Image (cartoon, rainbow over all chains, first blue to last red; front, top):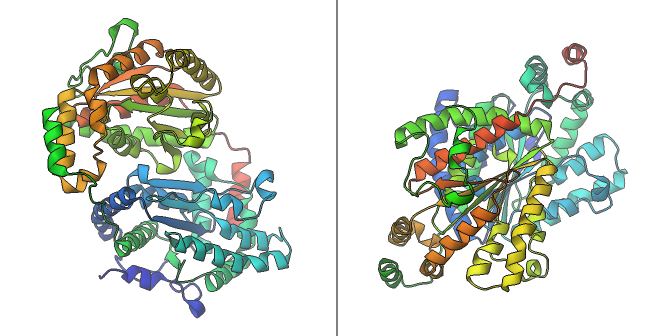
Length: 274
Length: 274
């Protein structure tokens, strides 16, 4: 499997809508045990690449995670992003905007949370909520959300130009899988805190959400900031796929450790004499 | 080994200065393999406790890491803090203050980086630099740094009262171990980026640093914000000790998952019908 192949297979493209189904394995391992084996070597490679990215401190990565409730944004952060040194991660969860945030443009809070050079930023939800829930729940008028697609594309283009490599993942689960996961949250006392009765409101509008997601994928998939559809009914596949997308992205960036700005031998002599 | 025993053994107390030496094993495993075994079960326990801390979102933990260059602040974050879900970590590295930061009180940038409720904050260096390098390098006048010890104690007291449980670790290495690590950084091309010729300036003032560290440990070890001396010549021991300090701290906090504010059976029925 060559560099870029998972990116190729999972990349959403204009007409394809969601591409693979939520339970499919369009590329890579087809069993949990094979995925687990690959995750170990992926972790080692990510580790080296992340260190070089951090050391060079010129570019950064921004991983955007979107998906319906229970699609596994948190689990992905833990198991895929958790493969790299936590010091190189900048994780930001976007909740319902505060009143202070609502007084600003919708991209204001996003700009404030961007990863510094050298970092891998991870957005758990993002500015895409402003064309998803904002649209389904009529939080803003149609001309407002309508204008946001172009705003987002321009914003992401600007980010890419400034050295932020953007990877956007739609964690694609089925309505039936969400049902199972909501039931599991309720039946397991230690998972109950994650359950929110309001999640059923979004679930009741499942088809509307699928439609606005399809619009996002069709209108905001650009070469500067591509969208990937990650089949997410199987957690192990989702984790494997996102770790692989991160790996391929970093391999393509090919960050290099900075050359020493000092005379190595002279410094060795100084240390030995100290 | 009961709860709190590593905290007891590594806690610095008034007259004891550094307590254990940098290569000692004052408590716990005396071999790398035993430490590694314990790290697995510590990780599982930390995981559950961190989830409850996060879910409850009332209190937070602040782990402060201080130590000479190469003492392993980064390695500790990776291997000890890396045991918990990265989404629950808020890691902040304090570098040389910027000109903007210097226009403010020394605690200004610290307050802005405090962990939100539910989070485990990790400071890689901290406000203690303002009574360490600031003092050794005469960056401020004696009356300025002299006043900071009381300021720090009052600040930490206030933090503790607001629900932040503070754990301060001095990663204690020997001058000889630092020499080996600096040489290793220079000899291994992939580690060279971590080497900074200026590190030798601090090394040349080793005894001065040990003296100002001793002062910090004597003057700022309080029940509200205790200092622990972590022997750090052995990386595996350092990682074990810090993970254990975190674990004992969380065990003592005993965070509880919030009780559901909804009728579980009614919600199960709603989900099943959806």
